[in-house]
Image (cartoon, rainbow, N blue to C red; front, side):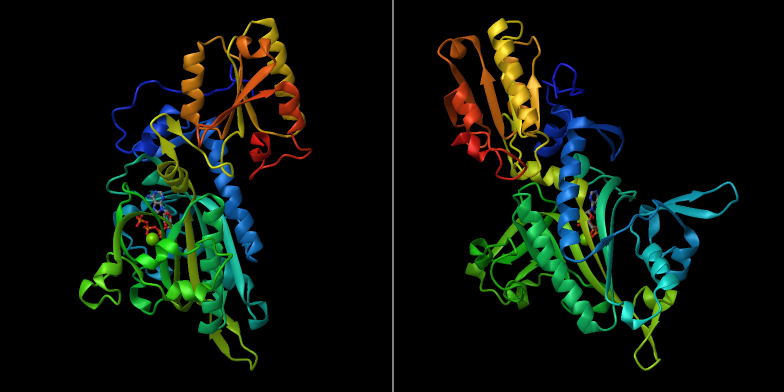
Length: 442
Ligand code: ATP
Ligand code: MG
């Protein structure tokens, strides 16, 4: 992508309304634009990141045996009357009346719709278990939308629903999602601590929230210091072991009965990026989601739901990865892998070298943003640091005279000078996402 043609409205000034780093940086980097309180447009750069996050979530859901579908944002009120939640949900639900005076609503969540789909088609125990998910916009009329996309009113969620024959099956579905969440967040470069949450009326221990620890987090979490030494990527160690380590959200934490001695108890702020929840027959019983068992008996299915805040994650990743100059994207979610800076657009040698490098990147499917504008070098450096692409390739007249091109790694700030040939020699045949350009740095 050529920067001169790209719609990327970066801002020099810090917007006054933004209280936390991720919100400030998303506005300054031209990622989002507020439309009304808690409701945002995603501009091209922001959308690229949102899509990358979404794709990681999707790949891990698919790998865990779940199937994607897509349910409507607008739902009929009558389904919520069946589950008994229509009146209970309160003011967070945006209620709409259609032209025939039917009660409709913009879905804050989708248990009712998925249960209705399930009961319409699935009739036999042989069809269980089932794990269905979607990535869809939700609306919750939050009292205090704030912190940009972190607490929006309209936000993108991955919501998954499991259907099992019995409690043991439901436990398997739950553990499967628990492990999947750890992998999902680790792929984005995040350490998400699974903390026990309030399981609601069902009781038991099958409700966890996944928190990114950050000072700007809205929740208080308490956890065993042992967590600090644990590999949370989900690929190592026993999950069962992890679930036995103490970590609780403040509504669940009871200082008097806490099993962790005070010297080992940590108290931190967390950003809730995911929530997994077993709720038994809470919806299947009133809505009649039943299957026929092996002996012809009728069995009310056991359900769970599993959410990930996809749009909130974009903010949470920035909270974890930024410095004074701007964002520092982990490669797995970066909007482009490389920013190519032409320090003297219009200079024949610089233009020629940049065009060649740009074409070579494209040929190797490396996502590259080429800053070909006639701006000052300082402005270009500042902009590139702000939008936080993992790699910067800097081409200027002085370097070119001695045959050198500079490479900067955004995370470490490390710079290296390479010859043009060395730069290309380090391009592997099929650079893709992930460690990808690490090869570039040699
Ligand atoms: P919170 O406690 O932050 O209000 P919640 O417990 O109401 O969230 P869930 O119903 O568990 O949220 O939704 C699943 C996920 O959706 C949450 O873990 C969070 O990451 C995300 N989410 C919830 N509300 C919002 C919001 N207003 N804006 C952005 N993301 C949200
Ligand atoms: Mg929650």
